[in-house]
Length: 251
Image 1 (cartoon, helix red, strand yellow):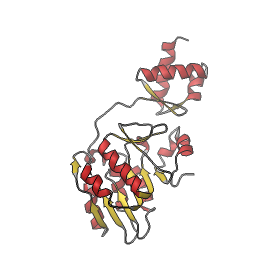
Image 2 (cartoon, rainbow, N blue to C red):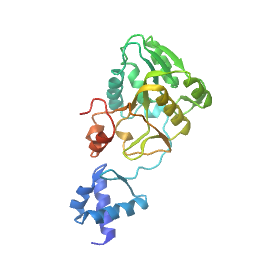
Image 3 (tube, one colour):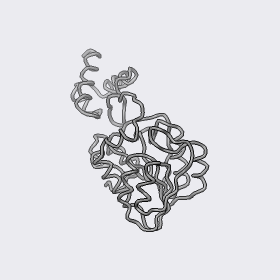
Image 4 (tube, helix red, strand yellow):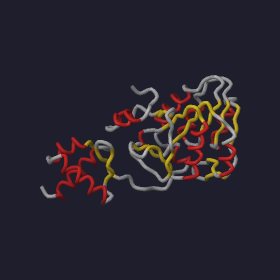
């Protein structure tokens, strides 16, 4: 079979499913595993697809970061599910950091623990937290217009004055090989600093963040956990993620 025909069949399979396993492609295309691997490498070089652990997916088009308003309308059921599970990790007397983002925002209404103190860089989070009667500190600094997050040196300097029992972060990308990423290096610095200053860390991601990579990397630690949705757990390569990363509420 000519390579062009194999490429066409591979793309057809990827159009049917978000992620296709290597073995599935071997079966559907009818060639050896080594041939499929070479074809995937070639298609990845052409920018057609992205190889992921155990298979491949079509390349996601690069797009500008959405505003908070636009993000609030996406994957709302998942964000509610994730937010509720995140809030359940908070105990009475916890001193926590919650960063900006629509998924972390959803956890606020579900916080039932007493005597909790929150530091946040999410401008939109402040009203929701104070309405719950939660003692709240907002980091100063530059306000990013898309995410309404405070960022920059002043925000980081203020953040370093605190220590946290728990840290809750949203993330733009979660990839098996590349870990957690975000489009903005200033926001990445806030997230990385919070992890450095926290005892336990929870990363909140819905299914759309998987197999996606952005510009700035955020390092985790051994006591970092992922909180995700049931929909994400149905992704074809989720079992690979589950073997490498620690999840809350996932067997």
